[in-house]
Image (cartoon, rainbow, N blue to C red; front, side):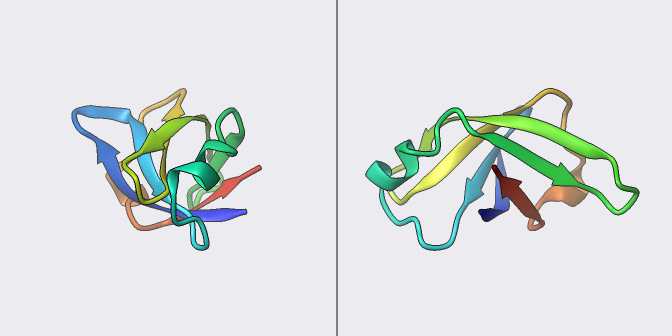
Length: 81
């Protein structure tokens, strides 16, 4: 399953808000909590995180990464396993 990183969560660059096409409400988004998320940059470095919760009522999810994401990650595709 793939999603798009749409924003960082406030001042925490280790947390990102991800929107997944086809998920439109909280109930569907809650099913993803606990799954692994991986973003890979163009140098093949992987940033691994975990889905920690729902962000808002429209189906966006929060992903907490082990390392801070670089700014170029915004708008890029992330894989939810």
